[in-house]
Each structure stands twice: as C-alpha cells, then as structure tokens.
Image 1 (tube, helix red, strand yellow):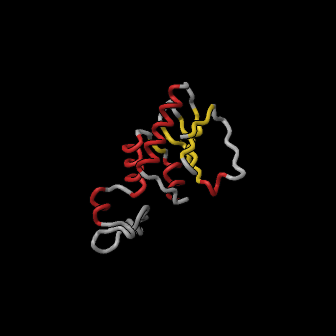
Image 2 (cartoon, rainbow, N blue to C red; image 1 turned 45 degrees about the vertical axis):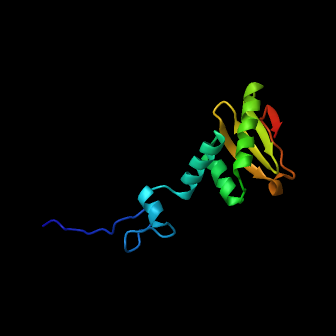
Image 3 (cartoon, rainbow, N blue to C red; image 1 turned 120 degrees about the vertical axis):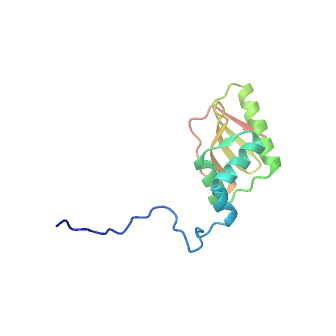
Length: 131
C-alpha cells in the first residue's frame, strides 16, 4: 500500500494575520496591493516628470531625504537643462541633495544627502547641473 505523506507547506513573503491582514500594512494598502515604496515612486514620477529607480527610492527612504514639490520641480528643471546639453549620466544638485540621473531614460539612479556627500567621488558622469 502506498504511503501518504503530509508535508508542511512552505510559505514565502509576508505572513497573513488572522483577519487576512499582513502585519505592518493598513487595510487600504492591502486592498490596493501597493507598498509604500511603490506609492512613493509613483508620486515622485508624477511630481517631477522623472522616474526613480528602485535603488533611488530605497536610499531616499533609508536616509530620510525630504523631497518637497519645489525640490522635485527643480530636479525636473535640472533634467531638462541636462537634456538641452545632450548629457547622459548627470549629477543634479538640488539644495543639499545630489541626484545621479540617467537623462536619456529620465530616471534617478541614486540619491545622496549632504551627510553622505563628504568624501564621495562621483564617477562616470558627463556633467553636473546645479538648480
């Protein structure tokens, strides 16, 4: 006779609590299926016209870099100036924050705040825009 074996299921990802809610997420986030990171990324793109890479969003959150509407608009202006000069990978300085931007794709590759700038060397850029 064949043996019947029962295996414990392997669960990956976020565990679900009783009531169907994942820990650390609001019911609204559960319903929309969007993480905070994705919501932030979408808002940043809509405000500045520039996309943020996953890495740039993570650095912005981890280093608590504050991005208000004015700074995002200035970032967008910096990208336009870089486009006019046919720059590809550009360092854009907005106040005390540096954005490394791939101008062709209109994508912020990484962000660096003033506390991390000291001693930093930016390589493989073909221009800097200060706005």
